[in-house]
Image (cartoon, rainbow, N blue to C red):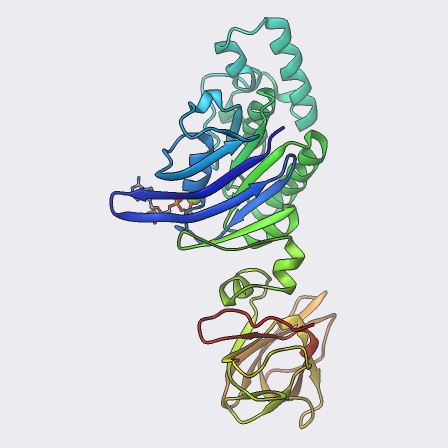
Length: 355
Ligand code: ADP
Ligand code: MG
């Protein structure tokens, strides 16, 4: 097991800086998810931890020991990639045990470890199969088995579920969560999918353009995003953000509507109001904070998504639990649950609550 530290880590390719000021302390046994849009530097960061990519500056430590210049195979870290990278001519058992085979570990040891990992991952019946005779999910399990067998101090996953279909992704996500409970090893998991981040992580690290935007538990990021980027990246459907002018007691929207906000929200510097689709109530037309017209209504059974147009503001989205009998073209009132509202300053920073 391992405690991993990154101190002022940066990565440059020539004059291009792709990661900067990365400071992160990962506790022993913690499940950390790095999340962010494509190209933000997630894989690069993970590859530096694995030793597959040199660190341009800063320090990388495992259990207090500087590891920057330690070779990948001496770092005692196992990585699982999006492309499973299995050996096509080896069966499942040999693919899983190959690292022990090249290390010339005793055959009996290897056999027992392989069968134990196969048991954990539900692969026992597939040991003689070649990768080409496996489904995507099974191949991904073999790749995980190969990592487990090394019994590493830490596991790194780079978008391991991206090649799987939606149903299988959910199933494998659960398996990874169970695997973490069982092994209680330190895990760093990279994804661009905020749902995977919210469901798997002890703590999430949100990256954008090579910078850490925020580090926190899933609920911290959902309830207290540090800025507009995190606010709109975490949570689905995306948070509505509308331009406003801050007043003493609340904000005024572009169409002149005044929205009173709780005292503990600092409203004076507010330039934008953020409100999640699930934090808007549908009320009778003429009441509430805003008057809107229903555009597209999606009935999902469990929820209703209502896309609305608000005159002078633009389109917004409302999500209500259950089946709400709203029709396209209907006029509605919207009431904002102001206790769950967010305010952003000119530069996108979230205005802190006083209380
Ligand atoms: P992510 O995994 O978040 O999608 P990456 O870590 O793969 O992003 O890439 C981060 C940035 O670094 C991207 O802008 C990418 O173009 C750049 N990059 C990655 N590898 C190289 C390289 N070998 N040379 C130059 N730029 C690179
Ligand atoms: Mg990547």
